[in-house]
Length: 255
Image (tube, rainbow, N blue to C red; front, side, top):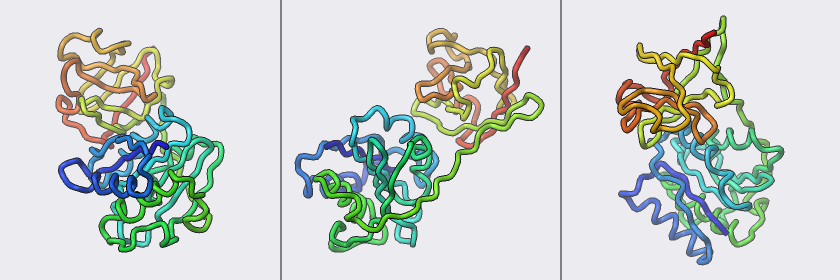
């Protein structure tokens, strides 16, 4: 059984290793995959984007453990969610919303059964004490309903770019390791001729691959996640434009 971990823990501390140790103590045969542990601290939206971008690339029945949890220790719920093809273990804080919006149906359960937690539960490390044990037991075949009662889960729609008089207000929703700016403009929504404006800079060239651009050129490209990206050949668009996630992009179609 594949267990995929996605956190904002980084790798210099013991946090990820502790989670893996708990899972393997329950199921030594679990195959643990690291999605990433470099989500910006407490950045739920970034984690949601990364999960949505890659979860369908995993084998059916993969268990995703997603721990970006600024509400750890509070009354926010710990949950297990089953879709048609996957299982997710996460805090109930919206991290799973983009995935669940793509699912035809799902069932959600609260994690309240102490039998499936560590004997001592820290108020600061539910990744180790609640989420990792749940994933370990799920990977051995424990039914999700055993963790606690079924719950009604509120899933929020993701805001889409607004169009006014032909001009759209879009946003940067993710900045990847290379400094590419992932926008909330889906690949099939970009006009054939366009201008993207941000930080007093206009981008109007769309290329099929990075090497089409001149060295240092700023351009747009249709990204593998399904969203338009703003990039710099062999450079960082984030550094060049001095932008951050959530910043505004104006989209203007050209006749």
